[in-house]
Length: 393
Image 1: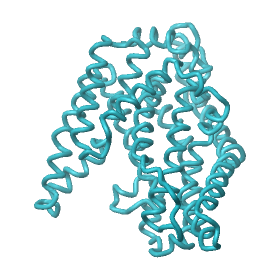
Image 2: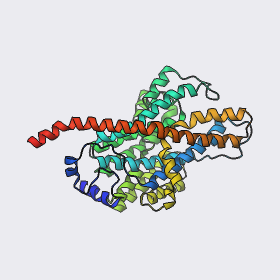
Image 3: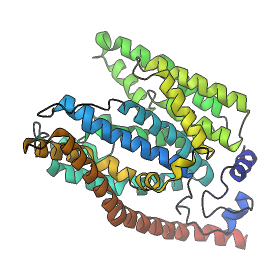
Image 4: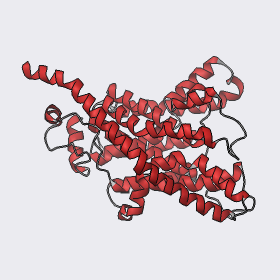
């Protein structure tokens, strides 16, 4: 498996990480400094798909969700109700990119550190900002309790029975749990024997999710139901098929495993997903998303390399965190001031993208770079004794 992965590295846009070299991975580990969190060089088309997913979610929240929850004073004239497919695309991309990141690093501690450095600082800032934002109309109907705020600081409030202060952040909770599942599979050797690892999770999804949905009305109050529901959420069984699809696409991209088995696995994972989602997603749309991710991974969609997509991709995390609650407040403010709904929408969309650009360049990136440097220094210091002992031995 290790040889196959190294072979795959050479054919998949060689040099995703500036730390990579043509030497054997074990030799590189022996001579490189442990600055393992250097930014990867990315497949631009995959980044652009993340930008498209972010645009999809912004339009979904500012048109469909806002209209349903709060409503404009006059008809907007149209909605974009396809937000679920943006989430679907996000999770398939996450399965691909995070599997690549973990398997190329080969060190779960470094992978987890990289993810936390990327996610946590800006998230915490936004959570604190939301304590102020939710005091304005139309979000001020229900105050945030101390318990809900503390639960949100964990990034996984639903585990503790509380809702996200910003409703869009439920996907971040799923993402964090996916990291736990992915690292566990890696540590137990089930990313090498991935048909066993992912196959077991898909089987659990296929059995447990429909069973719990059917039993909720009669047994939702029981401790057994609560325990099985906790397993369902901790193992992200509702979304495991999407992450598995992304992983298998990465296996195909790197030439690991028989291609026909990987393709069959994708078909099975898609089938499981649509058997448990109660018809919320169109199978044809899923097939289209898988096709887009595959073409992007092979660099076959050159239009996605255009600078606007690359820029939006770079600011997508800040856009994701900052657009919804603040955008709802601004939409309501402009709407109540008498502006036409389309004008309100245009102003808030432009503002959201501009704010995300400023936050990314002035806050997120400097903090991320500083924390990466700090982690690299700490890692180097902790690993020096073992290197010295190895040389002495």
